[in-house]
Length: 337
Length: 118
Image (cartoon, rainbow over all chains, first blue to last red; front, side, top):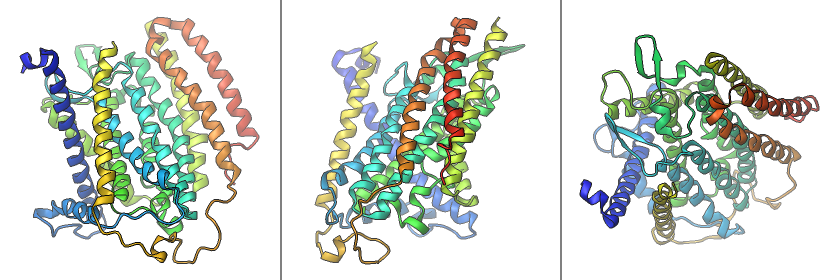
């Protein structure tokens, strides 16, 4: 393996295979996230959820995928055909590309990543920002009033919460002094007799709370799922999409859900470090915990009104995030002397 | 330094290939039986009489402008955050001046009602 990795051609073969494995893992994880959500939501609402296809309904997503692939995926009349086809592809591309810089802890001192870049988190923000284009163009090109309104609402929501999301992580970078996700997870403290990695949520609890709320809004999930508010907008920007083009939007939403859960685990909860638990299990357990939190929120909380949503983003989360940066800065420099 | 971006380039190419395959499949698989009422926009079953693209609330435009102001500024925090421990008080005070200007702008927009949505 090492010989192959050091070989100039073999190196890129290894990289390509690693990418293929990552894509496969992310796609499979996405399918089972959908299953997990449907079962968990079912239990919250005191019904069994999918349990017919395969053991515990585990093959439900394979059945749904095949069904949707063979559905007619037509382009409605008077749409902007090029934009209509491109929009969902932007969503999937943006969702997948974030995974290029997310490290996955496999074992002690063994991590798995595609690109080890020193601006990791910034790159994830850059890619996830592209999601605005996907939703806005999808809503605009559909030639449907509800799609357009859903797309616009969503774009305004995404860009409003992006500021809070970006600012909520600045204290973490100030403490660690790096944007590389691996460095943030490996950040070591010397607290009395204890020397080792810590969950950074202990030092930036406010940053974590802001991140959690902004991340829910960024992925268009309940209680911030106004773009898809079915009672008022049918399906928002999704209304005119069918077949595999609908699948692309759906896929992107769930990949983004896993991405922000993984980011929460890496940035605030020590990534693959958890007492004596093997790293890969610890990492997966943390991601599943955050995914469950998402589903729990959707099953529990009613949707916000639009003006409340914008007020929360601009008047509460953003000033709070800036205050958090100021306080963290003063404390850090004062402690350091 | 730049070599670390090559895997990213390969990743982008593979993802583009995957998406191309998905788009192609969406046209190949499945039946293709267009019908006038099937291709009409779905607006709760009501027959569409006006075009979808009409004038929009100026609020969306305002939000987009505010986003440009504050998001671009917030990106400036990133390089500073990485080295702020080396810059110590000097860097902190310089950043507070920058932040102060930003906060004055925010307070002004807030007072003028630019953040209200009704």
